Length: 356
Image (cartoon, rainbow, N blue to C red):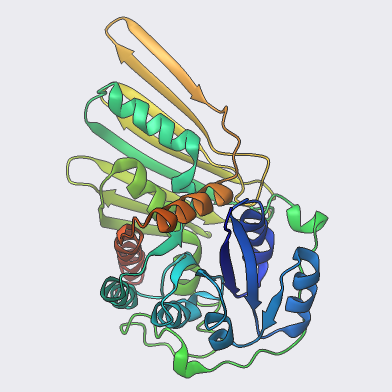
């Protein structure tokens, strides 16, 4: 079997704890090259995972013999590195969010379309087999119109399922200089100075974009619709987002609370004849997958179906889907189009809560 050769750009926390293990588990993929400005990190990763080519140059990685590029750098570098990979003729898998603004995401879409390049975005929850099976059964049972949708996401300190405490992440004190000329400028209506603080979690927009995009994306996936933002309430670190889907309403309850360890996330879909509840685990918990419960009624008969048999890790599932797509040549722009909608909603939320 000929293996596809992956090139990884960015070797930080998510690359080490999720994506490199997921890629390494696939029998038809070989991690052929890694790139990061922190040489001590890439050298240790190369030894741990037997990766033959190590560089601190994105250009050198993209000119090496790889079949696709994985972008695991910081959000502000996504657009620059994706553009470089497309120009080099490589298919791309990138961490979420796609870019810092909807305008930047539209620019990537236009470039990918022109080049005929496939770009996938890492919303792994969409690839959960139990979620997909529950949604399919809900459609088959013809359960009527949606009445209400709810996303409840309270992220605790152990969002990584404590894995990093068992398998330490390689890090370095090496200072990585910023080249601000290549960073995604973010929405023009944000008037803050583009400095290191702007491109960090000290910037409320940056934090909302990076953490909230999963909730927005999953809500759109389970409802099949894109809402308008009606109102936003923010208090004590909690954000409540009221949404108008046209013929039904929805809400996102979102909070990052590192005073607790617990990961508490559930997405609910209420229809005329069914209730669907989806429980998603901490993202890097390899031994667990999402659980779904579907309650339906048909006259006097009611059924409660639980989907918890499939324990495939979502990060592995999404990478399998990406590899299958590029292997079969089913090049599409669906992830890019979805990402534009997601980022547009994040922008709406931020502007609503800040009266911009």
